[in-house]
Length: 308
Length: 313
Image 1: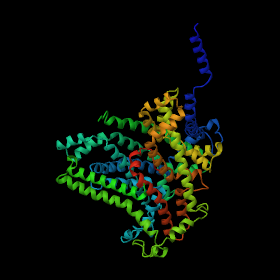
Image 2: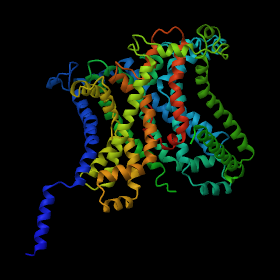
Image 3: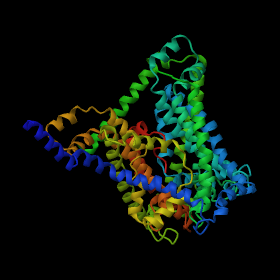
């Protein structure tokens, strides 16, 4: 055996004994993020599942009534207030996906087509997205309450806007919906204009030369080419069913007519019986996941392989 | 460079941009409009303008009223103040009550600054570390990590809050601590990870190879070459995260109840018995000012880099 081979073997042995510096680097760089993720995602969600099999004192449920919490969630669905809560939440799907998104698409199109002051519109519309929801709700409700800017205007017609956020008038839910629409548009407009900006000018120029009308251009060129952004925003809007809780809470407080699933979970989480909100959350996740994934697949199917 | 020169430069740039857009609108075939199309654009302009006013006007109204005396506001809440006063700002600055946990606005702002800045610093750094290693190094489990990150982003988890509360209180014992808040904010595998991952993935490896040949260690390469090269996306992500954390309501409300941040504190303040609404308006104005300043400086950066999932507290 030559000396070179012996040396090589010795080196290999030495290498095996010590971990490579690059390996140490990888481990150190990933240690904290992986640990945090393991605790805050796996730990939290596994604990969430375990909570659904515990009672209100966080003791394990007896084996014969292990699914008691789940049964409770489904049984409560027949209570009118709970029914209304689910309906209230579903409204946000309609509002986000079929009102805010199309209106934003429309606005984004005109901004993209360089409407006068379009750049300013885009920035101003986006302003609510960078302000705390608390401030937005305070300013919005101040406008209608006594001493607000719109209060005397409506008072001329004999309407008391100070009652607009109180349960029983029937207007309170409209006030929350209008607020969500008002503050939600800017975010959608911004992402949609960014999506539209990627459309090559040549394509639009050739369409223009061929005499395509703005409406045709909008439906046959702009929408298919911004479809990935629209799909993402649609899915995001769907998640509003579970994610909307701050707006109704801060505007009207927790009242039956505006209560959502998210708000119920948020409120219950601050009590001691954590099993109830955890079970409700898990049931919603189990229902929402296939729907969201299905809708995503369906929407992606519409304008397949749009390349530009 | 003096501040006035930078401001002048900023406005000159804005003017040039506006001129360019104007030129395009007049001369580019794409934006030439005729007959009905012109009418449509005029109608849309009016609608867009009304919308814009609806966003600006309420805030201007709040700001103007914050300069009025309480008695003037009670008589007239529409016109411009006859007598401008800073009294409301002074009262708001000193205000504290049992509802606000005896914390003043300055303390709330201080808490917001601590949490937003340290949270941003930690999460952006942690995300950069994770994104860099996953994007640039071959190691067993790399695809698994990436797969899990994508999976967790796709699955819509509802209501993990109760479990989070229990874990923070009973297992980690980090409830109601600043450290606990930073821990909650310090996730490394969110949207920031995805943005930085795609940046590092497309980053040329040549500089790093050259540094490696010269004998630089992996840490040295990361801190001296890779991180500075990623300055652009890191600044963008930091600004977006900073605003997001500054505005966050839910996390401090639940996990830091004894020390409210400004977002939580304003809500508490609105619920406490204030002598006049003008004090609340002054507090709102005080809170908005730093955000508007940051937004006007970084509006382009923020808007170009915001993606679904980013921002919104």
